[in-house]
Length: 69
Image 1 (cartoon, rainbow, N blue to C red):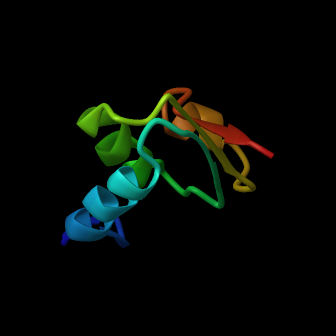
Image 2: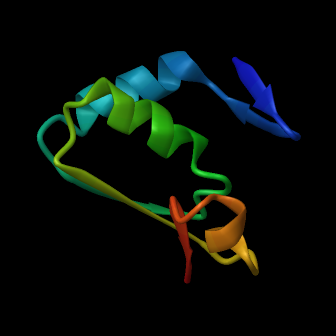
Image 3: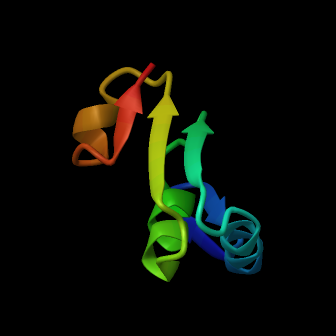
């Protein structure tokens, strides 16, 4: 596991999710800073991954990787 400013990314879980989502389009709701999105898309077997979160200014915080819902 890796901790990012209080957020924990469980890489074995991310790899399992990437395998589950193989060749699918994914929508992440409540995606925080998008760390799972980064790991899952880096694996390269999902068609697309759109990440959303309700935190104000999340688009700017994540450099556009996560969109405000």
